[in-house]
Image 1: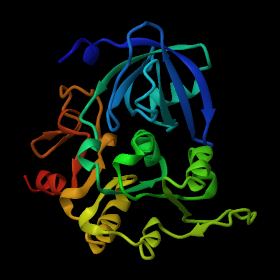
Image 2: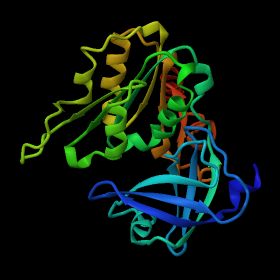
Image 3: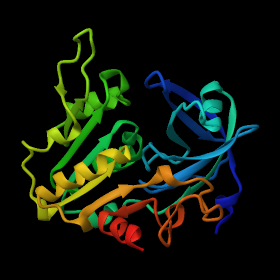
Image 4: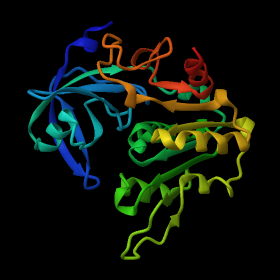
Amino acid sequence: MQREDYIPRPVVIDNIRPETLTEKSFTLRFTDDEPFTFRPGQFVEVSVLGAGEAPFCIASSPAQTDAIEITVRKYAEGMVGSALHERQVGDYVGVRGPLGNPFPLEEFEGRDILIVAGGIGLPAVRACILYILDHRDNYRNVTLLYGARTPADRVYEDDLGIWEGSPDIVCQQTVDIADEAGTWDGHVGLITTLFEPLQIDGPQTTAIIVGPAVMYPFVVAECQNKGITDENMYFSLERHMKCGVGKCGHCTIGNKYVCLDGPVFTYAQMRQMHDE
């Protein structure tokens, strides 16, 4: 364990961007001169005085070393998330990390990349998308499938608009339910309905999948139908974590600590974890 695993660094809230009625994105700027480096898929523990601390995936580009971005959903029972939503620009919080194992993006070089994100799962893969686009020549075809419950539940609308117009990535969106005002002119249906027309070279494709647990079995089945192997499907199980350093046991699955051994696992690893 390193110092940053246990001792939070003070950060100032540099920007707050509302995403939806329940989500906000925070830019947290470090107040010291020490660069903050991380790899996509890692997470931080954010502490708020009087509320405690909670893990959040890092949603910003790894190229930025003086600040990070996190996206926080406000739950009625979530003390830290609720406390963050009450904070303002200029307030201070603590950041501990980076923690956990990342997506091995270097191993994906020379392959097609399929990213499947559902709802609030998009923040967990945003750093991957930004990294891949920064190193675009190292990858073949890059496709993002993003699904949300309604148009109003989508996060990073500006990013999605940019990615939809970019020649470097194929970005497709869908919503489960269109808005009553009829302003949504995009695809309507579960995220799995985006798979059928996809032209995928299964053996040469790596999938990165993050979203609500209920979508996983159906997305896995669609990936398998396209020829993507279990070893080439990568998930982030960041929702299962608490302390971040393997002490509380909250995130134990089988003989693995999600915070230490993950939060990134292949589907093959996940199947083995549940069998043990």
